[in-house]
Length: 294
Image 1 (tube, rainbow, N blue to C red):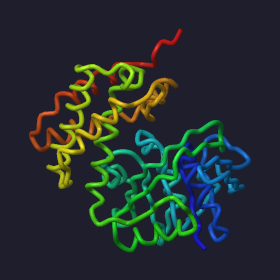
Image 2 (cartoon, one colour):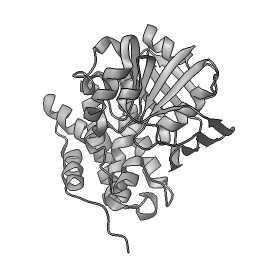
Image 3 (cartoon, helix red, strand yellow):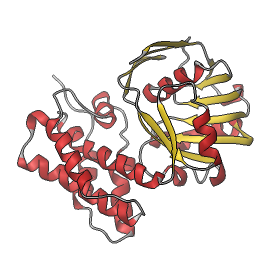
Image 4 (cartoon, helix red, strand yellow):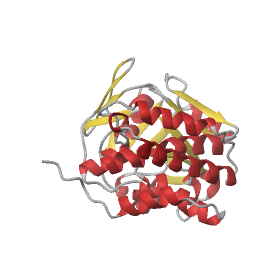
């Protein structure tokens, strides 16, 4: 039996929580701002329901075996009270967020040895508090080692592909190559496919090429084929296809701009690698608010 606290049960965190709750050996607590009664997730293999414990204050929780952080990256500073209450001598903390700086992002809050960085590709959307739709089963990867193996074991009952990999750095940068290109649709507030042009292709290609160069400098094994794959995917993106940063801008929320594009600029400066395309979209989106919709 494992006691598990999920901080940030939105689209991804709520979906993960519902799957974990299907194992009767797990004791699940959701750490939330706004309380709700239950979880209901429509998945590709049927509906999941669960009634986990709900906590709205760090004063209401105690140390658990596992903490899974599924908040937006910009929310990390606000997590300190939760982590102080939930993390004990044996606790591991799985950081299930975008970007490539999972460990560095929590360095001031947790010992490095307890942090388990996780990359996920589980397309899901939140309909209401506690209600999600999971479009595809997807996957989660963590680094090899005892922590990684123990995290994978939490999901043995679950059809989502959860695995520990030897080269987590490469997997994380491959995901970032895809995510960084999402800045174009976030700028346009349109899917790239229906408005494809030579100029849009040049911007997508520039974003991803810069990401590849910086990722290689950071130790990732990235071939040029990933650039063509992301460009082709953007060219074929149907109307209505977006990404979480697009959705955040549309809803007037903060965007994970630093984790998706800013990190490429910052680490590019570290390695003296020019990143003009990413720097441009960071500058433009930093000054952009919610789109005006008539």
